[in-house]
Length: 288
Image (spheres, helix red, strand yellow):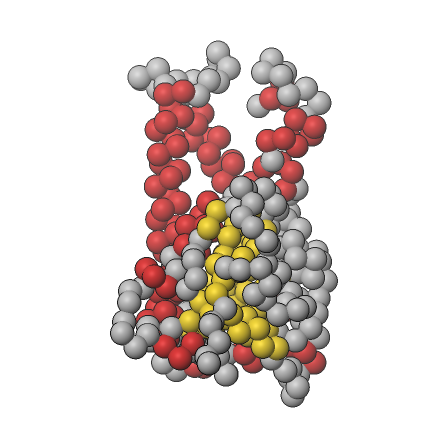
C-alpha cells in the first residue's frame, strides 16, 4: 500500500522573527531534521501555505565540492521538500556554519546545487537558526546566465509583513490546479514573480507616499518648524523621511564578516530607543 505523502506548511513568527516549518501532523519529520516542526499552532504564528509541498528530507552529499563551498555549510544540505509534477520543484535547505548569515557563503553552495536542482527555492539559516534567507535564482534557459539572486531576509528585529506577503505567493494553490500536476517551470516562474525586486520597489515607494500624506495631517513638530502655504509641515516631513531612509539603508548594509549593520539595529526598535536616549520625553532636545 502506498504511504501517504508528508506535507508541511510554513509559518512566520512575528515575535521571534524566525521561520518555522510546521508539519500537518506530529512526528511527520525525519529525526534530526534541522528545520524542526512545532507541535500545535502557536497564536503568534501566521500560516502562509497549507499542504502544498511534499516533505522529502534527503541529505545531499558535498563530495567533490571545492573547499570554499564544502566548508560553508554546518552539515550536508538537505533536499527538504518537493512540489508539482513528479516533485520536480525542490525546496533546498542549508544551515551555514557560524552565527553570521554571509551571502558570500551562499553563492558557492547555490552554484553547485543548481546543477542537479534547476527548479528550486534555496533556504539558508545561520548555525543558531536565528537568521534566515529565502533565496531565488531567477530562471534562464541557459544555466550559465542564472546569476541574479534575490533574497527575502527573516531575522530578529526585521519587519515581517513584506516577507510574509511574498512567501504567501509561493503557495502552490495560487499557481493553479492541473490534472497531472503543476510543471516545475510554472512553479519556478511563480517564485521568480514573488521575488521580483521591481514590484517590491514600486510597492515600497507607494507605502512611503501613503505614509507621507497621512503624516502631513497628523505629525507635530516644534513650534518654530517651517510650514507650507496650507500650514502643513511638508518640508520637515520630507527631511525626516530622507534621513530615516538613509539610516535604514545604512542598517541594511551589512559587514560581510559580522553580518552587523553600519548602524545598530536597536535604533529601529521602539522599545530599545528609549534606553538609548538620555531623555525620551517630548520636551527634551534628544527627542528630535
